[in-house]
Image 1 (tube, rainbow, N blue to C red):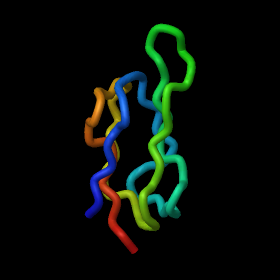
Image 2: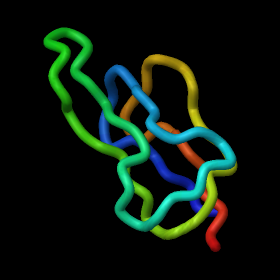
Image 3: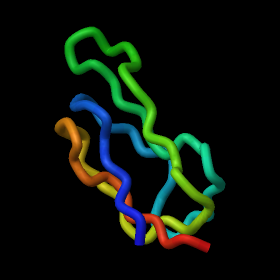
Length: 72
């Protein structure tokens, strides 16, 4: 399993759910600034695989585990 962590903290909006197949480079989630609402960063898939676990709370902290990816 490949852990995928957030590059920084903010409002977390996931774009894929557990069981979804992803390709390397797909945007798995977006992180928004909680005060201004603009996009701060993206979380991308490091390899092709299937999402095994996904964070679902609305907030994340820097370097927080957001996904586990089962490599194909």
